[in-house]
Length: 148
Image 1 (cartoon, rainbow, N blue to C red):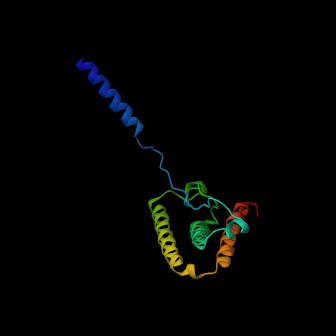
Image 2 (cartoon, one colour):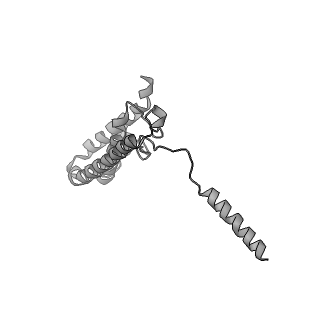
Image 3 (tube, rainbow, N blue to C red):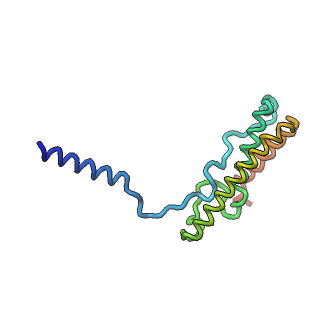
């Protein structure tokens, strides 16, 4: 009976260890943050039915996505492309620069969102709608960037 318990325990540990083992191939994160997307594109009619607070949040979401994409346009326009995919060596120096840039972008988008939540409520709803449509058009044009 003790041998069975010992055998089952060893098998369980072996399966657990293999399931949680790390890959030997180093992976690099996506150059463009995977959150740099717009969930839904809108038309002017849809936006005109929204309240100012909803328009403000859409505006903030689009600025956040653009801030995460625009610096990387020469390398990639969609999330999922890693440093190694475009030939950047996966060295600690490059990885550190990439991590610093990600942190700078996060700080920028957070402070910009805070600013916008205080200042943009004074904007006209029509101007907020136009801003959302403008940002969405930029995002749509990035889909065709590779075809230029």
